Image 1 (cartoon, each protein chain N blue to C red):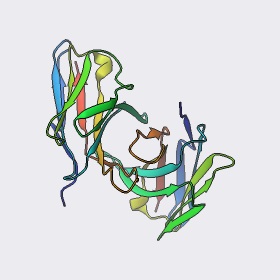
Image 2: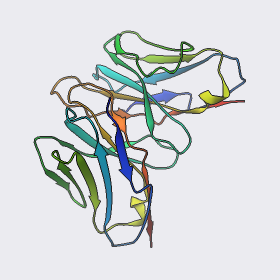
Image 3: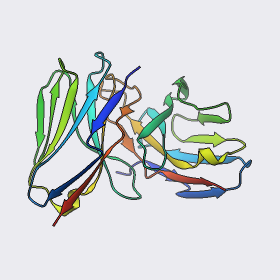
Length: 112
Length: 115
């Protein structure tokens, strides 16, 4: 089955700097890759996703890149703000309605 | 519109007791998922419903865990004879079938503590 590895487990950046979180997956059949942000005491919030027919997707300060050949994808957050501090999870699945396989998360701290 | 809701938000139970957790998906979402998040860990898939049927129960950790969904809407996850290792946050997500996407939207979770 699918296995998703996520790095780093913790990341501290200065406000205004960029943050990058990387994930690798094992199943070449996976073609849907979402990213979730989880704040303390809340459920995960979908912030951006990418499908395998696209190499990059941007939404304001966040972007995701996908390299299908290498089976890895990354989340980029630019101009970080204190409110970006949270735990971020990557996931992979087949499209359609199938369970997501999650990475173990990255705790991002943005220092003002 | 309203998001996914779960109840209770917190549940403390004694070892050996049964518990029932409830999930109300987003209106019109036909797919519903249960995941479990242990302290400091990622999310672990438990079971998935398409309508009222469960095509994938592969994540249920033991036969003490069961789930049902009625009317294509509300789902309940039942844990019988709870054990301390069942302590975790139980998360529910829902998604639409139409469009081929797999965008799953999560509820706030139920924090279960077994003493």
